[in-house]
Length: 107
Length: 117
Image (tube, rainbow over all chains, first blue to last red; front, side, top):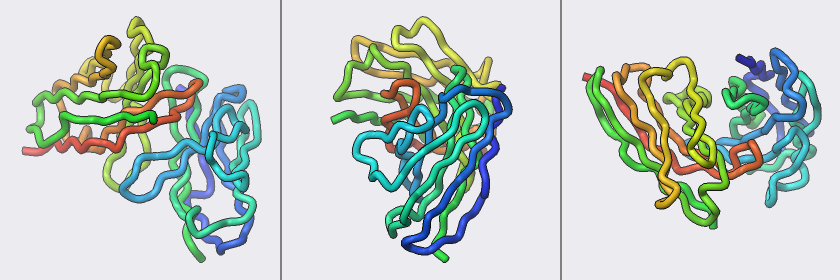
């Protein structure tokens, strides 16, 4: 099974900051990677699919890069609504795997 | 509007069974693979099971293989998760998710399953 290692586990930042979250796959997954945002008590929400494609309705301050084993999610200028937990997910195989999550908190 | 609504959760004793349902609307259900994802309280997301659009192929996480069965009824736009031999570690919120080109573009609100005596 493909293992996904996400870092950092917690990130403290301020409104207006540029932040980057990293996800590494244990083997190549091509570009079959998605990023999700989850707020407490809510279902996850798709932000980015196929490593770099922005889901419809998601603000352009979110961007994704990478292929193979190394991927990043960048938020260019943090807004108050962005403080949440973020997960990467590989779907290269039908046995999907999520990263451990990154909790983005207000500094 | 794409919508997924889960039902069937609740409290069950260890070793017991439960069947979850997920009713889909707003899209051509049979065209999309669907999945179940769970999340224990305070923990991360764990993929549980998936099924292709036709229902011909099913997939399971090692943690549930042999105990859980995924199925779908494309005539009525419903996906199911039959959960047998439940354990305390199966306690979690269960989400149905799908409607994406591989990724999970739509999620239900989640349904709580508690396994306890």
